[in-house]
Each structure stands twice: as structure tokens, then as C-alpha cells.
Length: 247
Image 1 (cartoon, rainbow, N blue to C red):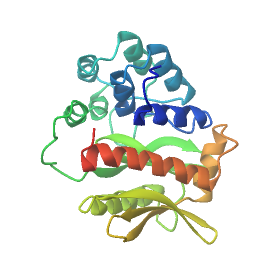
Image 2 (cartoon, helix red, strand yellow):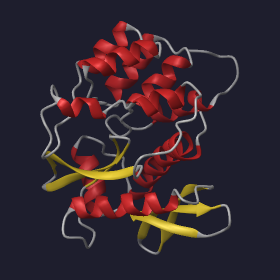
Image 3 (cartoon, rainbow, N blue to C red):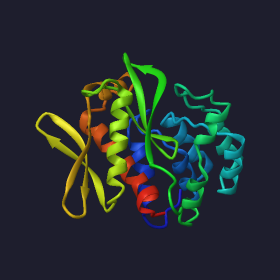
């Protein structure tokens, strides 16, 4: 690992490795960034395995990954860990694989502005996998899952809840200056967006089923505060890359 200075990526890697296994799955964006920061292949592969990260990659995606500097060893590891399929989409080996690494993502990592976005940044999708008796739904950014919610939280389904969260995030993207933070309101732990103008907006509440879902995967230390902190970290990371436009 590089030792010259403390970079955002080194802190990010430390935090991920400090979290319990299976809690902080990393994305294609994260793998690209770690590679560009010159982390060793064995460290990246160990992180992928430790966090049980899953990916959906097509042949075109692997070509783009090579152009971004990823080695064959890392790409093979990613290909060996396919993500679960979503309802209504083709299997991993077909068209759905193209969702994982859009051209905009690689351009942003190269430091080139992505330009006008054709549609909402955030959306939602159902996952076929079931965990702890609750249907899973994902809040997605550029086709990649960034948050997984389980409980309905007053909605008709977990998918409806994920769509509501995506809608709030898309609304916040029109005034993106600010950061996500954990907010405790009585017995509830929430993820909120604190705008630079002082206005705070609740994005979602951590529900018991969300925590139970992570515990069911073997993460015994997780609590509402831990899960909220993880979600806050992920949102801040992706917000800076895809919304504000920081590398």
C-alpha cells in the first residue's frame, strides 16, 4: 500500500477493512479508484473478498476496465463474483450486465466532466434475493446498487420505499452543496442531508429489518447507528463523484 501521505482513498480503504465482513460491499467505482491510487492487486482482491462484493460486467465493461488500468487478476476476480439478478431484467450474462459500468463513470474517473445527464441520477430496482424474510430493493446510481433496503417503512413494498429514497436524492441533486450525516431523533436513526444553507432533509430511516438483514449475513456487530454511518459514507462518496463532480 502507498505510504506517502493520507489520501481520501487510503482512509476509505481503512474504513472498509475496519467494518465487519459483508457489511461494506464495494462497487466498480471503488475498484477503479483503488487501482488508480496504485493499491496492490492482492489488497484490492482481499478487499473484494472480505466485503463479499458482487459485480455485473459485460465484455464491453471489461474492455473499459482494462483501459482504466485494472489488471487481469482483479478483473478475473470481479467476473468470478456475479451480482444477483433483478426482477424483470435478463440474467447476468445478458443485457443487464451492461448497466454496471456506464461510459459516464469512466469519464468521471478520468477527470473529464460528464456533461448533461439524460435522466435522473438515482432510481430503484427489486432484487430477487430474499433476506431474513424481507424482499430486497436497491437504490441505484448509474445502474449500480448503492443502498439496499428491506423493510417497507410505511410503504406498500420495499421497492416503493427505495423509489421514495431515490426521489428524495434526485430532488437534493438540484442543490447539491452539502453532506449526508447521521441524525438521531428519539428512538429513530436517520440518514439526513445537511445543505450548505443550513437546511436539513431526512433521506431515510434505518428500520429494524434493515439491521436484521445485515445481521442475518453474519454481521453480528451491526446496529442502527453503524448501518446509518455506512450509508452516510457511501452517499457522501458517490455524491462527490457523480453529483458534485469531484474526482
